Length: 88
Image (tube, rainbow, N blue to C red):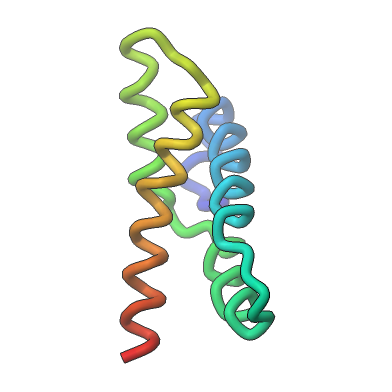
C-alpha cells in the first residue's frame, strides 16, 4: 500500500479488502492476463479513488460491504482503461 495511507490505518486496512475484491473480480482463465495485471494491483499505487470513496461513505450510514464493493468498482474502471490501452 502507498505510504500515503499509513497515516490513516483504518482506511489502509479497508483498502486491502478493496484490493482483494478487485483481484477476485479480475480473475481470468488466461494466465498471461493475470500475470500482467496482478502486479499493477499489488503495487497498490495511491488508491486515491477508492480511498476517497471510503472516506466519503463515513459521512452517512456506513455499510462496509457495499462501500468496499463500490470502491473496488471505481478502481476496476481505472484498471480496465489500462488494459484497454495495453491492447491497442
